Amino acid sequence: MELRRLAWAGLEIKVVGMTAVIDFVEDFAHLHGGGEPPEGEIPPPPPPGSVDVALLTHMHSDHADVAALERALGADAPVLRPAPATGSGEEVAFVEGTEAALARSSLATKVVDPWETREVGPFEVTAVPAVDGFGDPQVSWVVAAEGRRILHAGDTLFHGWWWQVASRCGPFDVAFLPAGGAIVDLAPRQPPSPLPAGMGPREAAVAAKLLGADLVVPIHYGPLHETPNYVQADDPAGSLEVAARELGVNARALRPGESLSI
Image (cartoon, rainbow, N blue to C red; front, side, top):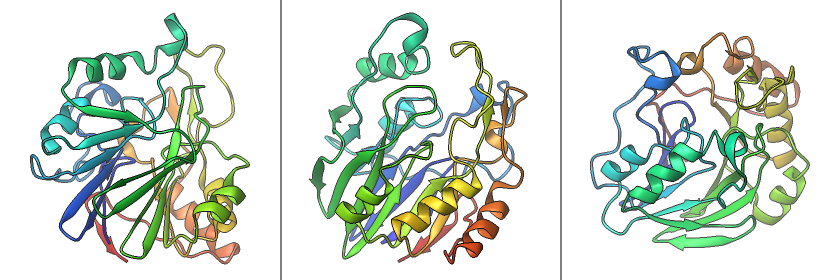
């Protein structure tokens, strides 16, 4: 299994000539005022038409890029996703743009409920419970192939399902866990919470310990999302490595575009 970190929370997985992506996004202009993204933060995307299955942890625009998926996916390649959000007005403000773009697209989307498993080529993918920091539906993804197994946890909060995920879906060779721990102040969710909207470094290290993962890799952090209303933890990757070491967990940060073979 060849694993390549993409931008932000994105991940590319290659096995026996087939490719899966999780939370693949190319367009981050809305996150930094329409300017150019920082150098090195957007690695080369998969070649057009080369992706066999796409997984979305949730519908926020920094995790779901419909135009990028349309370019990358091959004909009839499925897009597996959690159930749509329900509500009106500000209740669905963070997901309505992505949902509208998906509805206009030709992508073959399929809802996968927590603990449900799908097979696509060599990939066995299972949606497992996760908790979105703003109340929007989210899952994490377990991907197994060729005797290897990983977990990708989007930008979930810390929760109490880690033990069940470990017992039902483990063991894990690698857990890709959010570590940014951002404090967020955005108009659709007021008053703002002073608590992080996703896991920080210490929480990611503890989650990796509870999951029994051989290795934890931090995701969902860095300069793509540095704004005054999105304040991340100090040195998420370095802090995760320190916290993981204290718990006896192996940790490794991957630069965007860097690969890992397991």
